[in-house]
Length: 479
Ligand SMILES: [Co+2]
Image (cartoon, rainbow, N blue to C red; front, side, top):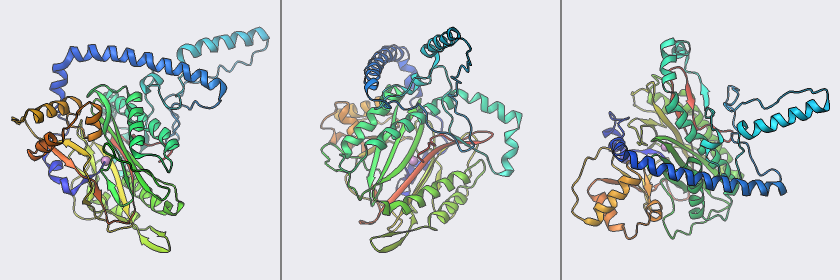
């Protein structure tokens, strides 16, 4: 989900309050009731998951290979995964009885300690898959040479250890993102209805993350903007859009645990003629990630991204197009329950002297376009978000009041869309929603479009600036 210059005021207002989650008080107020509820919900979800698992296990006896490994990615430095519990009992058993014993033993061990395998479609919550183990780490990258001293600095390493629980939560959100997108790649095909696609994706996120009110769930609506539409498009109720064989679709979705957000996106195209466009944008995003670091100037990152992006061109139907960085779209820092945490990461050169700091989360995302390289708002709005800085506003209209209470309870300052209101049972909320927007409590985020007929691709990762190294949390073996 990009920050766009059209909504820059939002970003600036919240610059200082990155970590002050406004819902914190609310969560504490709800304290016991919420725990009570979540316990019984947990039980229910567990029961359901285990039933589904049994059914799928029965299935897989007839059809081999439906199970996939829980965690199929390895990081660039070749680190072993965190789930590397050596299974081999390495018994070169001499006698038959020894071998039988060993078999029994390993079977018994499997029952208690062996990692579960994810089902297809994925149905086992990631917390259950990794029970008793650390969540898989993202891709580690070193800082530039002038920051390398951090790797061995005792003080920095100690600060890093204090982060462990928070990092484990956001790694879990990242693992949910990887598993869901791996599954979705298998079912995203020309002919799929985008409405169904989004509902399926979000349903998988909710299952794997064990969604619970504001505690954890989807972090924002699933973007599936097509072709010249760069961002902020998701179907509203009744939308009949079907994915076409020549479409370029940006799949941008978010997961969160405790307000720690993973914001990551990729582009899908079936016609290989778009491959050079996708390559340009993937390279540009990876360049941005490589340039990111403690003390890195945001403007320098933008310049590096643009240079790589615009070194590419793409030939479409006999015409050659330069690939342009969209100059009014940005990556962004991420705060707690705050997708646009206040700092923008430009994707073109120019200006911005602000620097990245230790302990910050960033979404590095780039957009390459065969059009103007500039977006404007167009089409029907689906995305909305509460203004992070807004205090209490007394409301007259009872319907607006009621809708705001639904929003506060279910999304707080996380972005939502009309489909999210629909599934909560809200109806005829159009006027109330407009009223909340008119009063500046809720901001609409209309689709952002380049020129009609052009094509836009996007890749995005969330990274964390640890005291010693940076971690590309959402990295997978797909992108
Ligand atoms: Co984003």
